[in-house]
Picture (tube, rainbow, N blue to C red):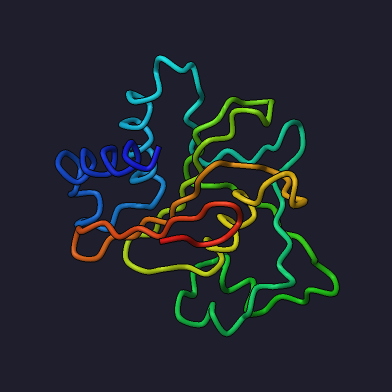
Length: 170
């Protein structure tokens, strides 16, 4: 699975790098990478979804109590701004939409890959989402994705941070 992600990103860089160069919206970058991923998973009849916010029939949510607002100071994306200002006593969970998912909609037994993407920086809120998405069911995880990856681009070069079992791995 990891190799398929790397290959899809490689195709993106070869064919669509102007999206990063022209500072196109992150969703357009995610979409193109999703298109390349789809070709690698066609035979498995899986869904490759961008910005998919559902878990079974409910919205995806993340517990924000453990996210340190100081980590969000460097990123300052919209979600990190929420964390910086957030009153967690009133808002303990936040709905979210992963950038790309490789899964089967409506069931949890084929949750394979969760991907978060930023154009030029790392994001602690995205890390928190990937930890939640990859936390195993037997450890009280809600989603059970096999792997997660945070991808960001510096001067059009992709960088990766991988997550398995709810933790970052090398």
